Image 1 (cartoon, rainbow, N blue to C red):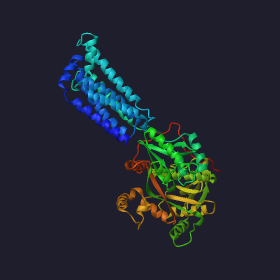
Image 2: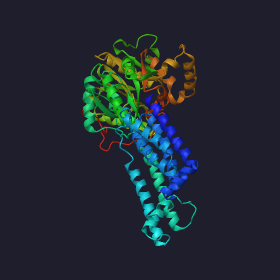
Image 3: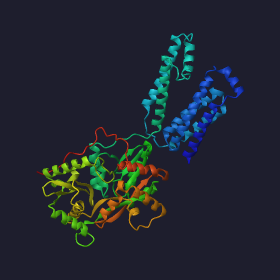
Length: 553
């Protein structure tokens, strides 16, 4: 409520300043000012008051978002407006109102925390001041050199007036130079305001030391199937409450991948701490792929949640290739074997140099065909990580010529495995990937693995045949149907259903109802479904190794 009232009051002050600057002075006040100040001060005051009013309107948007920098800027600009109101027309009522509003904003400054730690805009601010100073110095110099002003005092007076007298039409070199400097100052001032109110910048990726620290936390508290993907190369880390969360900032929105990784029951502490940090940086926060078990604590922090799809997972201890429901997968496996395909299952620590070379060859050829890598919350984006690769499960498919042509990689977490990489170079035989997943499930069922996560099917609860849908969900289903080829919604559902999986709902957690459209768009950018901003890599960021940490001969 405070933000809205303050923003409305500031916008009203801006409009009042502009309106007052564009209307003539009251005659008796104009006569009084003519006896107290030189005539050029009044028209200059009108121009500056109009510009200041426009600045207040721009700052009002930042105040509405709770931006502390906008409040600080508004206090300074309101104080300037109070002086200009007196100079341009002896409008003491408007001066008092501006000062009162400045005092009110200054007294409530502590309640505006957004962007409190942002320190930006120094360079364009310096450029703006330098350009105006140079323009003034140039104008004064030209007054003296050309003899238009007799004496330094008159040159200083006329030089100040000359800053605002350019018409941008004169072809004289001196006028062009003056206009160029003034224009540069105005552009730099506009950039300064935009950067001052903008969110804090962030870098993509993390340092090797942070990667090692995150991997250690993951090994102790990585209970969720999305946890292993926190170590993705382009994610930054935030550490708090003996845990962490991974994120990437896209145009002022911090997209968090999955839930925080922390000791049981402390996940919301990590998120609360990060939300405060993000607010000081001027960022919005959105979580993609959040688990249902944390939603209550997230809502207590002021977040909202939207069901965006289901994750398919299988208990490998009960998986079998027997029975009618699994017959298509069984047939796919037999078909591949008849055509001379063989399969090898390896843990990361068991891979030989020859097998590593085969995996790299498939990966490189696959990347040449697929120029965009989709995924953010449930993919690592690279083949190797480090010592944590040792427990990952690889399924290699070799054709009748003895060449590896497809492989799967399941990354390990506390209770199971998550499917990360699916690569194949040949279109035939049909069902090759399904057969490889089945072999991985059989292998996992022989150990102590409790679950194997297959993948995330976006809006599976909406796209499922026969699902009871509300009116809004029916509209959503129609819209999704128009883009199913881009997001592969139905194909993923059909693939998952072959293994008779359990379904785990996943949620989009966002900060407010009005923030939902932008939060969804930023998630799509992070997942690479739509183009996103150019990344700003960490200078000394951790980079994935070119081979596993341990590959036996």
